[in-house]
Length: 371
Ligand code: SAH
Image 1 (cartoon, helix red, strand yellow):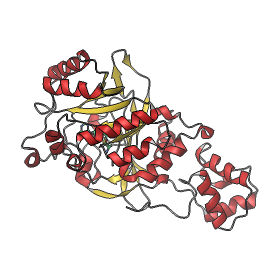
Image 2 (image 1 turned 90 degrees about the horizontal axis):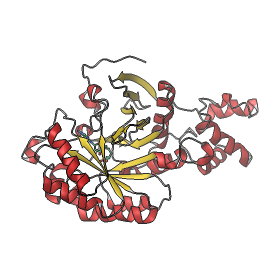
Image 3 (image 1 turned 30 degrees about the vertical axis):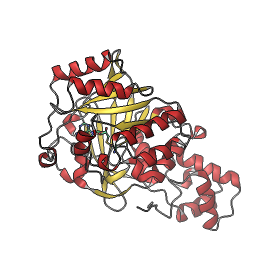
Image 4 (image 1 turned 180 degrees about the horizontal axis):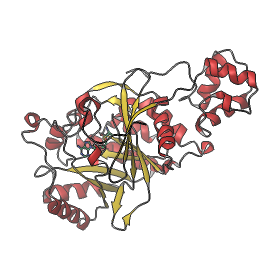
């Protein structure tokens, strides 16, 4: 898929791209002006060049004419009982995406953390058809532009008034299938000169595309990588995640190993527990063995039931593992030496939890506040 880009804006461009675009549009600007524009867009988060008082007035007006700064329109804001906020954005072409701001995403043995984690979308829909994921029902509509990825951060920051502390690329879509735009967005977010957030605060989650994972390892971004594992055998993983028929566990885990070799950043495995499918003692043993291959941790995730699983493909309906068995599974993993985190079900009541983002299945009858 081609990288769509709104061609009349500088927002979403890297610094060298801004230099280029400004020159192409016929502006004869000194190099430091491009740097000022880059800083204004992403560090100061201006909405128009008119706010850039460091620029001569006439230049500001010309830039605003030629390069309008687009905004994402918030059309719905849903607040969960646990403080999770889901934002529904309307894009310039009328399509919509969701981003979720989650207070303290993780619970660990030491108790609650003070994080505000933003869950970003990278595609409108997703082509991968994972059987447990609501976004799959939308199929892929298109990739998001870099501008649309970056703008989710700034718009949520502004609308919520919160200081975002962590960002996970775990909303709608498969980040590795929108590779270039995801990389450019990460380069902007983690550029130390912009002072947005440190690179360790970013996690990209993938269903497991080995070539892209290896390429990602070489980007030198210093961000964390998470693999949606969800099964420890190819037989089950292929049923849950059809992408596993193309790239099996052994190929995907080798690619994760390469990520660790290149970056020395421990990897994360995400593992949703499905009653009777992947939650046995044998699964816990195999999962722990996988985690011992390299420094890593496992996020065990309660399954958030969605309306439309595909029992025909699986031979069974998907159900969440009971609380008691869930805890037993965690204990087994820990006793096998795995480092385990439990993903909370933040936002479940507003269908903002992992894998619940699917616009075609709106409307739901939860409470909404129009912004
Ligand atoms: N495509 C990427 C990122 C989006 S999914 C990926 O596959 O990792 C983000 C996380 O939500 C993944 O770990 C995914 O497996 C999980 N998820 C999807 N549907 C879910 C559901 N119904 N309940 C709980 N977690 C789910």
